[in-house]
Length: 312
Ligand code: APR
Image (cartoon, rainbow, N blue to C red; front, side):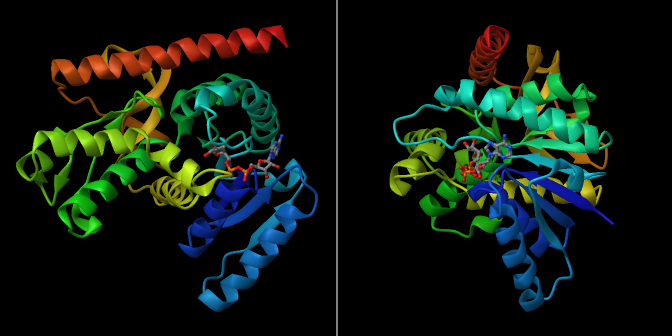
């Protein structure tokens, strides 16, 4: 029996629960600090199961003891970005929340794989690793799958083709400095560089970098949750079914791409034990320097976070 705990039963957390149950991946425990809310959403989702025809249980709770022996723990607890608020503004508030959640959940699921969603993503993933003291391959951040999904969608829109045939790769931090890689983005094997002019590709890359902000400004309150929820379920599926999918994930770099001792988005193979391997691609000088720049910005934010946490 597989069990996925989702901490933070807000928009992203509830959507993760929905997709994980609907795709018949695992039973789900939804946890939140708000009393009654995770129980209500879980009961609603469990009732949906009887209509949709899957047998997964969805349970809501305010207590970490119910999360015991989870195969995967997903951390979405935190404050969502509001219009005009940068991801980094969230750093201070979310660091305290994620630290507490990581500490409590790892006590219940010391063998679990942790997927972090709370922003700023790469820094919160680092903090989860630091707090849980788990091996690096068991703590993973969800960002690359989402950023690549956004890029894939924009490519499909531009070419007026089915998004099913589009595969794209976005590396680096989950922020304005993320690195979409057109050379490694294809339509059924055809590099997009063969299908559209450089200025159109640049504009799609730019829209991808602003993909989260575009949705925030349309929604007016709150941030994206369908594609983030689907991205977490996709990663959870590769882990629970030991599929070895090659996905861009926030992983602990220990020298790959010349980056060391931080979490950053890199292509990785994802299976039952978490990250099985980080795949190293030969990047062009421009791609490599953009990735380095993105990594350095994460490192600065990790330093800021560590100072803030010491000061508290
Ligand atoms: N423990 C458990 N749950 C918590 C805690 C805590 N200490 N602190 C806050 N929460 C819960 C809130 O009660 C809320 O229900 O986290 C939930 C967050 O949900 P939303 O506010 O709906 O935010 P959401 O859109 O789901 O985004 C969550 O994911 O994509 C990122 O930037 C986004 O960091 C944000 C996170």
